Image (cartoon, rainbow, N blue to C red; front, top):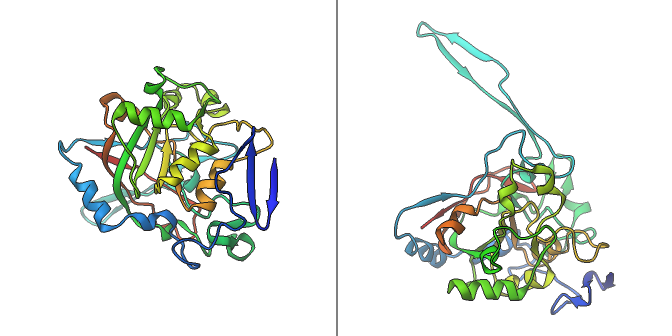
Length: 309
């Protein structure tokens, strides 16, 4: 159920209320004009901490290939066309190709949800009212261009391994106990300013059973999301299309974890991340790097994040 208290939502899910629900969840700790949210936690010290984790030089690509046949949520689409071959030009017979790409580029494939993506009613991160900043030609506030490069310590939480399963079931809600248990088993902890990636095994369905991949997903619930927010993370990602459990335990709710992390705490979500190789090799701590594309006014960014061991 949803209850209005002042201007904030208190989400009740099967008797669990979001911890420390406040009547007012803005302005941001970084000021009323802030548009970067948790990215402010990535300091030079965090970048140097990430550098210190590079010991073997092995690079893991965490992004999927972008192609028309990839799983696409709802009515989203992707197409790439080569319009023609240009040339030949000059006495040296120079020819070249361009491409035309169409799609909801910030919200398909491996992508990062920006702070302008998910709101609570009309209000988005830092109390920004969508009626004042959402325009047909782009967001005038909270666009993806405000984030900046993300270079910090990354942590993989292998919940599938902790549960002794190759793949968690669709609709399984990852709990605080699951996160703590997996971290304890891995002998890993989470620091302020970290990026957290959750391995569920669900990504093994990518391009193998797209309908099943999209019809549900294991993921974190509100309590687990609050736990990660309390650790002051910057990004929460997973090898699923939603990061949060789908469907939600309370069928009347849509995207409560998105609301909690993005709108209330300015924490980004990284969806459809390729975590299988990290899990296979037991890489639980790494240098994480991702630079959102500078699409002015976009709600998110595609791209290929990397982990360096």
